[in-house]
Image (tube, rainbow, N blue to C red):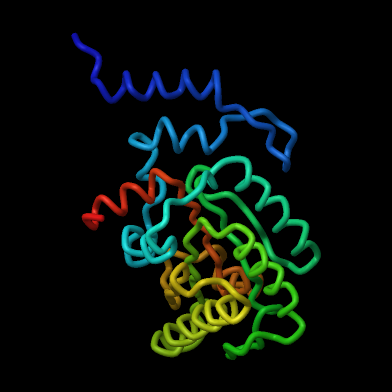
Amino acid sequence: MKTPKIIVAALASVSLISLQGCVTDPNTGERKASRTAIGGVGGAVLGGLLGGVIGGKTGRIIGAVGGAAAGGFVGYRMDQQIKELKESTQGSGVDVTEVDNGEAILVNLPDGVTFETGSYTINQTFRNTLDNVAASLVQYPNSLVDVYGYTDSTGSDAFNQRLSEQRAGAVASYLVSQGVASSRIRSQGFGEDPAYFKGDNATEFGRSLNRRVEIKIIPFDEQDVAEAQAAQGN
């Protein structure tokens, strides 16, 4: 029985990564495969991990790079960005984690600190923290930025849907006002969709987990740019 070509390609990619693509993660001090190496030799296998972008990534990548080829961003610098985001938001209640099997960054903004109850006006005391997040996005430009809004189940569906959209839009607009290119950012509200609950709505603590805004940072590299340009016939 013949081994499928995609498996052979994947194994070859893994072998090449193990030989050439190791870096030290600044967050843990551990040696691991570089995302630059993964993006360069394993993109055909791993490209699907960058899915789930609002509106699709092809047109947004083209808009973000303005027709230019992107540099090697996915790799050590993504780990460095995570480290810096954690340091700059420490003590604010913001949670910074890797998602999508380590191919994206999720910045979780706490409800009670970011907004007053029922409001989509960003608290003045939280703006310095958002300034730090915006500065990171400006410093590391090779990424798309999705902003998601969620609520608990208290109140009507229509109110919660509207509030989640307004909160996500308020954060997105604030990031743009701080210098993040608008072509990189999209926002979406999910209201009280149970699929996105993180806590039990029967408890105040559970509801507080469900009321949140998330900023998802999806890095892209030169291969993603080339594929996007090819898809648009550029």
